[in-house]
Amino acid sequence: LGFCFRVWDVVMVKGMPFVVQVSVALLRHFAAEMMLLGFEEVIYFFKEIPNRVAANPRIADAVLVAAHNIKWDAKVQDAVDCYVAACIERDRGERERGADEGAAERRAGSSPSERRAGSSTAERRA
Image (cartoon, rainbow, N blue to C red; front, side, top):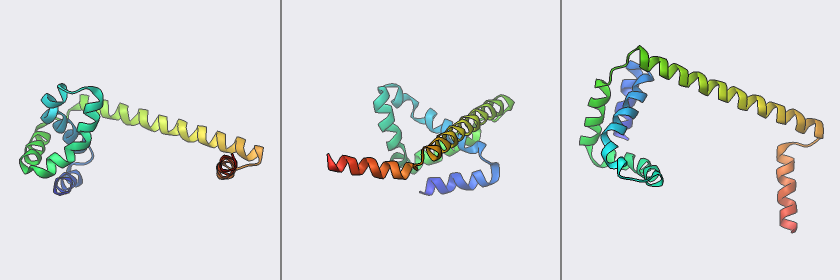
């Protein structure tokens, strides 16, 4: 938790780009170990990173120093802006699809919660 507070303090000063810098620093710090793992093992490894950082303050210090040394130039900002724009567009599409589905459900005369309740009732009867 101390590592999170330290990162959050810097985010309050530098802004959200520092979160990306910390993420890159974490990936660089653990890259050698992760390269030896398979895909599924990497997923479990990611889940273990907070425990490793909490258990070893030297890792937290090294990652924060490395994060501060990552240069944030126009290319990186452009990449982040493109990613954010893509996420916003994806979310907008999902909301619109959800609104369309909700309108179809209202025309059909049932709500999602009614259908869930009905299907679980039917499942219990079977």
